[in-house]
Length: 155
Image (cartoon, rainbow, N blue to C red; front, side):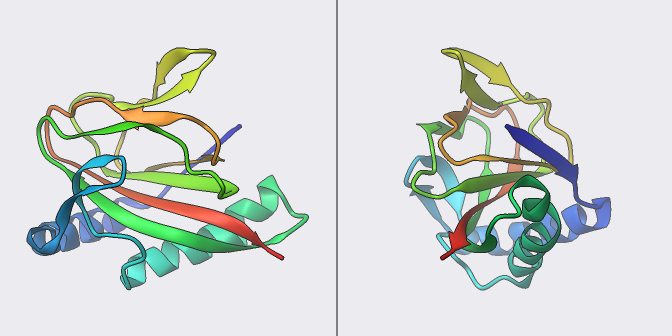
């Protein structure tokens, strides 16, 4: 199950500008991601705003039997030849990827029936999915910026 939506161009520009200012302070290789990352749960207001939006507007349409909270969040900055291993986000319930700046190649993919299914990446494209979905990123051919976030029910 995939739920898609878009975030505004101006938000993408502002986040991209922020990332280009901050990326030199980041480290490479956050678990499966072989790129520069913000690390888990940085205190960036735009990440809190995105999480709140998803909790209030998207998750209730997908599963309204729970209230939700974000469990982890981070930003990735890929440079040419960076990539992400095939992985999932369990034990979280739902995961989100937002393409802030797409690479020139469609590198995000999901494994569906043992086949790579690439996602058409464009600026502002957001995809919410069950956290057990296997996904990865092929080596990118240009700069790429993404936001990633996980959600769990409040018990």
